[in-house]
Amino acid sequence: MLTVTATQLNAWVAALLWPFMRIGAMLLAAPVFGARFVPVRVRIALALVLSLALAPLVGQGAGAIDPLSAQGLLVSVQQVLIGLVMGFTVQMVFASVLIGAQSIAMSMGLGFATAVDPQNGVQVPVLGQYYLTLTTLIFLALNGHLLLMQLMVDSFHTLPIGAAGIGTNGLWTLVGWGARMFSGAVLIALTAVTALLLINLTFGVMSRAAPQLNIFGVGFPVMLGAGFVILLFSLPGISRQLAALVQDAFHMLDVVLAGG
Image 1 (cartoon, rainbow, N blue to C red):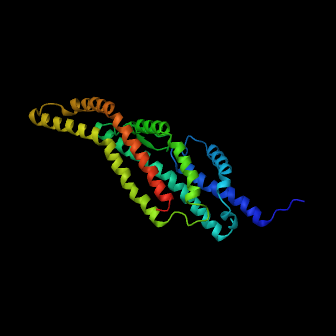
Image 2 (cartoon, rainbow, N blue to C red; image 1 turned 30 degrees about the vertical axis):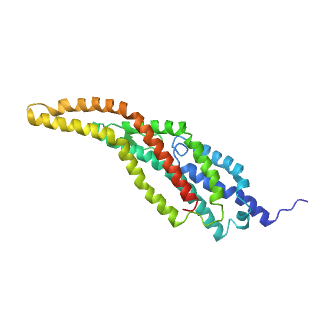
Image 3 (cartoon, one colour; image 1 turned 90 degrees about the vertical axis):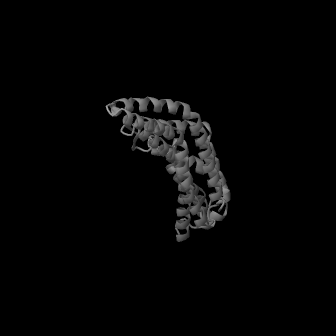
């Protein structure tokens, strides 16, 4: 007769439950995986499949913790926090691109043209939607989704279940990396905004030299046309800045998940 002890049952539940929480939280917060157009059932099924595959990596230490105890609740909160940190960090890369795109759109005069972002379900400038689509394609082309999954697998070695989890130093490192998000947005928009600023200064000089010139009737189409031309020539630089942002994000996650 097959008998199952409470210790064995706790070990089986812990080997599946806590990886599921960490992976599910990461899929909820990460771009592409956590987009609104991805059904919730698909995310749950993917998290369950990955949890089954990673269950042997959980280790025997987690089996000694009762999932229904106070310590088990603390471990559950830790797993959700680790997953959210991983997904939120990559989400900040996409937010950096969106901030840069909004700055360019305002300089071009396209700030009023908005569309619904299918990934987040909010109104964003049309130019921002174009940049988000481009960012998603570059992220997938760089195998960013596979690197994120690899980082998730490695996290069970660097931050095993039952350990202290992410400490205050790691959280402060994440907060400090927020400055990199804004600096990346400035670098993405710097070329286009600077060129459009020079065009605005030119129209300012023209309006002073010829006050009878309808600056709004002439300047708006010129700013739009010049903005599209500038965007065309600045796209290679944007892809390089995005690649650098993704690389910095994964390097920062390595430091945080290693206990730094």
